Length: 315
Image (tube, rainbow, N blue to C red; front, side, top):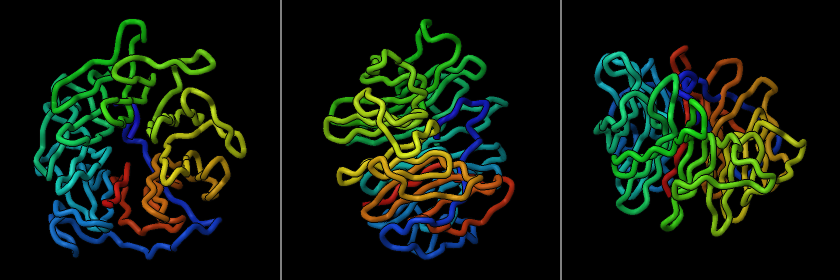
């Protein structure tokens, strides 16, 4: 997920279907907390498993096929922002309150690690081979865009950026590491866009072949702003699957520039994931947090402390 530490808890929502796409999902009800679900241990991923990262009852949580699992055993508040499955390992990035400060955290198969740098948050995680890449921030009032590779911190911020920057999304393609946030970085170098702007407000980055897509209010492809139906300026997440480009923002989903789904008017989406013919979206409507598969609401257990931030489907 993709926010400064003062507002990273503001995420996701509810939607209904307007345009049919592919298969229609069966509703899933989240009913219990525990380490196991109907498909076995939460850390034994199998093809087709759906993982959701978020917060349950004020604690970082990971759902597998509808069954929630609390990541933190202590009494401190925490939240999971991003989930990534690599082979037999399940990785989660998030943050938690330790000693009065929110600090960046990651979990590998449920084992917690505090990332270096002091206060901050980890918003996005991407595993490539044996390397674990994380994007986030360190600091609070003057947050600084930061990435970690295998736990080693690298500060993306410099004095030319002003007081605060953020790294919201990370994607690894070959030997190149892309980070979207206050800027777009490629291997720690700021990238320029065709209009001379180096500040796309990037919330999401996705690389497909030689093409780099950034969702940051608008959709950008290789630094060029793309035209979407309705000319939206609230695009927050992008995913490319089989050459098709899916983006989400506000209460809409677009595919290849055309409206795919029109969600309820008061919906605010923030994440999209595509697996085969299935399109997953997280968001909120009227402060009720949820996620949807192919436009059909997946019935989550909702409380004032329940949030969902990202989805990952095992292939």
